[in-house]
Image (spheres, rainbow, N blue to C red):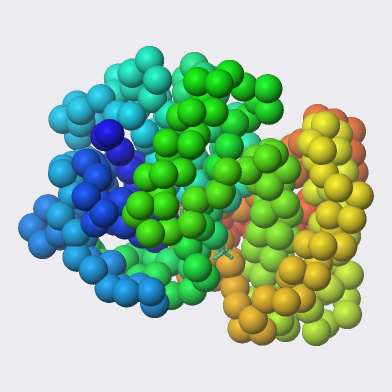
Length: 312
Ligand SMILES: NC(=O)C1=CN([C@@H]2O[C@H](COP(=O)(O)OP(=O)(O)OC[C@H]3O[C@@H](n4cnc5c(N)ncnc54)[C@H](OP(=O)(O)O)[C@@H]3O)[C@@H](O)[C@H]2O)C=CC1
Ligand SMILES: CC(C)(CO)C(=O)C(=O)O
């Protein structure tokens, strides 16, 4: 089994590192100083569930040096997914499986626009992690979990077997791998949470707890969740009727001081996933004729900052 991780950041570094550490043949596709550090000293993972250093089968920035893959995890940011999907085409075999782990509602769709959809599963992950320094990944919160599954609920037995095999690999690596009964719904549930807190958090500079405490901001979050719900329904995602209530409860239960990674990127003047979160909802609203005034306001307010971050 050859596993290829594209993007060795907080997400790819943790999950790829764990699989390499469990003895799997893992190739890490990274770049710059981070790649040099991994090549010279291995990948160091500092984790609340145990530190380790792992030496992958290969660490490279050159896809031409990568053996054909059985499993590819795409762990870049969501705006890089389409480009990466094109990049990995030469390393796919007949039965290779590709799983995107980004936040966002349409990552698998982007991959399917470039690759044969027979390869593509839906996926998401739960973890708090980041690159602490070149070659060093820090996992600082949440029991790590990858949730994944077939995009087509009536998939073939072959695909079911491949999904089971992937779960075995995740289990052996020592993190939770959950096979989803409806991965599109799971992706939209997480998307609703992350898109509600990220943009507004970036705009207000307030933590999730502070936004929940402020009545006006809480109402805005709730309205923005309803907008996402309506877009999801217009796209025929089988969201449950009480999705907004459940997501708002989940938001209220987050630690007071927490912020999402996209909010932190916005606040630090780094390129962020704004366009894939609020921007996506605004564009889908126009396409599907669903009003999205809250997302449109947040998106417009943050666009100048995002443009500056991307010019750097
Ligand atoms: N971190 C977290 O706690 C969580 C993050 N997520 C989601 O997961 C996704 C990834 O986040 P995260 O891991 O934090 O992001 P990071 O920025 O930490 O990692 C992404 C990495 O991918 C690299 N990369 C991008 N394109 C390529 C390429 N073509 N070849 C090689 N390397 C490449 C980037 O390198 P470079 O810097 O050079 O561009 C960067 O090191 C996001 O969608 C995020 O929202 C989901 C759950 C939790
Ligand atoms: C909130 C969190 C950490 C949950 O996994 C996340 O997805 C993010 O910050 O991007």
